[in-house]
Every structure is written in C-alpha cells, then in structure tokens.
Image (cartoon, rainbow, N blue to C red):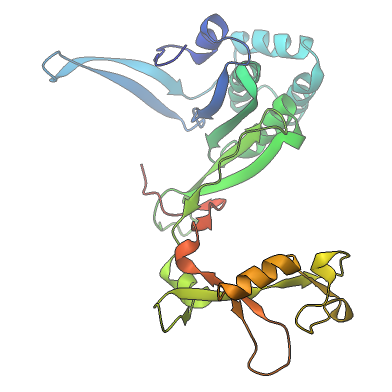
Amino acid sequence: MENVLYYGDNLDVLRRYIKDESVDLIYLDPPFNSNQNYNVLFKEQDGARAASQIRAFKDTWTWGQEDEGVYADLVTGGGKVADVMQAFRMILGPCDMLAYLVMMAPRLQEMRRVMRPTSSIYLHCDPTASHYLKLLMDAVLGPENFRNEIVWKRTSARSDSHRWNHIHDVIFFYTKTAAFTWNTQFIPYDEAYTKKFYHFVEPETGRRFASDNLTASGTREGSSGDTWRGINVKAKGIHWKYTIETLEKLDKEGRIIWPKKLVGVPRYKRYLDEMSGLAIQSMVTDISPL
C-alpha cells in the first residue's frame, strides 16, 4: 500500500499490514538504548500546542518476563537468529542489553520478510549496541549480504577529557540478495580535490582536465594488446585500456596527451566538466546535525 503512514508498534504493523516481498527500501532509526524518554506532542486544530502528550516509548530496556517469552520464541524458531540470541545470552546474561536485542530481533525478521529480492535496508544506530546489531543483522540477512558500514559525523568536535569524543553514528547497509538495486550517488568535488587532480587548464577553451592513464598493468591479447603508433605495450608488460579503434577516435578528438619527448606512453585528457562528481563515500561529513 502506498502513501500510508502507520502509527503504532512497527512489529504489529508489519505483521498485520505489510505483504511479503512488497518493500523496495527500508531505513530504520530504532531506539539506541540511550536511557531517554521520547514523547509525542499533540497540537490543536489552530496549530497551538496542546497540553496533552503521550510517551511514545521509553528508550530504557529492562529484562523481564515478557522478554523471556520473546526470547523463547526466537530460540524455538531455530536457525541463525536462534544461534546468535543464545550466544548473546551466554555473553551478556539476562540484562538490559539483551532485552533491547530481543526487541530488535523479531522486527528485523519481519523486515526481511517484506523486502523484495532487489531491496536494501539501512539500520541507523550508535556505538552503544552497533556491534551486537551487526551480528544480529548477519544472522537475519546473511553476512554475505552486508554491503557497507557508513559512518555519519553527526556533530562537531566536543570536549571530554576522559575518552575519545563521540561525534558519529553508524549506519549498516544490507541487502536481501546479491541482485539488489543500486543507483550510484555523486557528491561535488571539493576545491582541494580539483586542484590536486584537475590542475591542467586547456588554453584555448579554459576547461580544466586531469592527465589520466591510457594503459593498465598486465598484458592482453587482442586489440588492447596491439602495438599502436609504434608503442609496443606488451613489451612494457602493460595493455591499452581501450581498443586501437577507440584510441584513434580519442586522438582525433584531441583527448590524448602525447609526451613531449619520445619516451613513455601517451595519456588521456579527462575533462572536469564531464565528470558526475565523486562517487558517494562511506564517511558522511556534509550533513549537519539533526
């Protein structure tokens, strides 16, 4: 179902309303076991803040009888999730952290159920429980479907004389299968990058460009291993990145930089204004604190 906002316990919503393999993308920012209370505020129709409010959830987890029941169900279900939950209990004992992980496990299982084979899931957490959550996600989704640990620098420098200052959160990127949808995102090059790699300027056009390799290591058979313009790449233990036909085309377009002396190999002229930008990196530093 599209364009629907559900309010309530996501475990109940997932089980009652969300069909198998119907979701393309999941992003979850669950409680972090932060020992904080989170409230939902209500407003009057005129926009004025009402006095009434309810507690959405208390981000403090205490092991109790209900957790014992959920834990028993998880272990009885068998499989990798049962194995990792028993390992957690052996290491941690029946404590607050185990209560938190018992809360997360069935929700992650339901999320896997509703994911399409091409879908992805991003779990946002902090170092309080990230190491346990990664093991739990390995059990639910398979370690082979782990794609990235993304670090988000969520705040500026802080001052704490007793430890390394905590200024980041962690986002785990998993997929349901190897056949996942991926659309590469790009970020603009910063000035230092362009100065370092695109420091050449074409006099006649003013276009900035980089001097890039036309060859790569290792010999090849076929056109990419042939001698071109008297340059025997095989003898040098390298090969052309392009076919001879493409090299001729690039040369006609003025895209090849020839060495001033007959030493070395030509290089490729890569224009800055033709580049999409820098492919998104696993360290996020350009999003302000929320």
